[in-house]
Length: 206
Length: 88
Image (cartoon, rainbow over all chains, first blue to last red; front, side, top):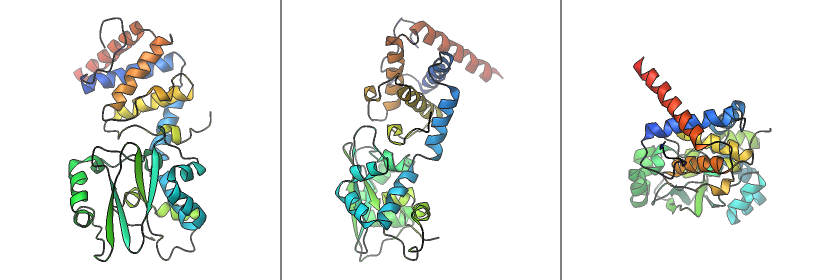
């Protein structure tokens, strides 16, 4: 940190190692001052790592599979429908759900950067923001899915690519897998993967 | 305190280093305590968490929770700890 008597400004050129030390220093101080507890920090960290993330999106998908009225609301206004399940975006971003059908398969990308529906999918995979994925899936979606993800989409199925941005973020409602009609909503949610909600992987009834 | 709701916890970027998750967790904890207004944090971008870190520090100083001198001293202490660790 600068020796001058002012807090650091938005200096994006600060080396990574120094930023790391700043974070450690800040954590030590906020705990020492009693502003937050170590337990609270650990709880939030664990909550994020273990619970926030694709599990929320999976709950949404499972609900859509078992509740046609909810699916209709989800397709009409995904932001509002997710809020029904207590899922909200931090910045009021708009969510849009796109539904896979026997005729259409959807896949999501952000060609500009890495816009992603954090509130429902949690951490984006590292490949999601890679230039290779962002370019290839737009130009050759079918080939990208088959070659890079081992997820071939039959020729008779149309592949639609949705380009997320900072204001509108897409996620996929995969097809309800056959043979799972007997499963509960919670059991169905366990089948739903992050990759399936991006559209680069299947949901299988294993 | 009960478990935090997932919504306000949405992070701004993909974490690529441990400090990013920790910076994010500190910010969220301070938001939960109504010490920091989440709306003051820049929404996104690759440098969002650096921006969050700066904003959090600034807010804590502005509100008198910590002083710049305390921050500087603690950073210096962390530098010393890291240096000692590197020696060994």
